[in-house]
Length: 331
Image (cartoon, rainbow, N blue to C red):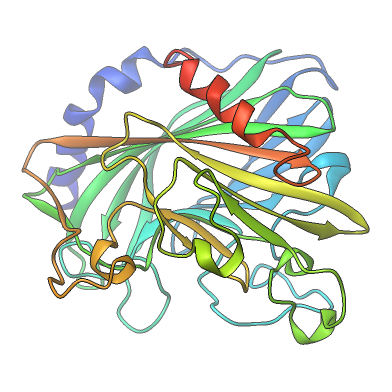
């Protein structure tokens, strides 16, 4: 079965892997430097750490840390490591990740009993560059019973930006490599990050009395009212180490079901979820948001993550989204 599925994966994404050029290098301290390590891939921008992409012996690949303007941590440290003043809820909220809670009836979101794992099958590209760097991998979604439910090819493109902002694109192609695949209707998904504890709209006990964070969507929904609504973009901002910073997720207009729904919480979860319709809209039909991918077929989602100084207005998030929409599809 393993060899069979790997063969299917290879055939399905042969074109993508063959088109990937060999890794290039840049001088130390210049552009985006992508370094392959045994269990992760390190990404530096102008000589400063931006993130590390963890892929070995983990429930699913994730990026940690995710460092913003002037190197401030944009995501919660736990469960990767303990840090003062952080709550220890939702151990599956690993910084920045992509997963879903109902794939052919199997849970790939949580880390409770009998959860599925997303396992890297191949590193297709890890490339440094003066203007941007790339990570491209192929992955298998393996349920607790050992069966491959689907596969994906994902690409992270990180741009070389000044210390005042960070910008990267995330693209994922989900492939039905082992029969039909149904991404089920549940709020538990999908492209997600867990913001720094001090950015939360609802402060945790260690931050009571401090200035709360803010959520804003392209439709004007704010804070707790943003949950379950549809919008082209969503921004989460707040104080980290004494400075106001934020992160916005842009939903590409060509994505299925654009504009997406937002599973964004006052306690710090921030996720774009195009599958959770019955939860978000409180519909009686528990399958209203199901997305079926026929055997041998694929579906692609693209997002941009904009990490910035200031709140959504100060960072001109709406203008930056308009720029994103005009940008041609990049390799």
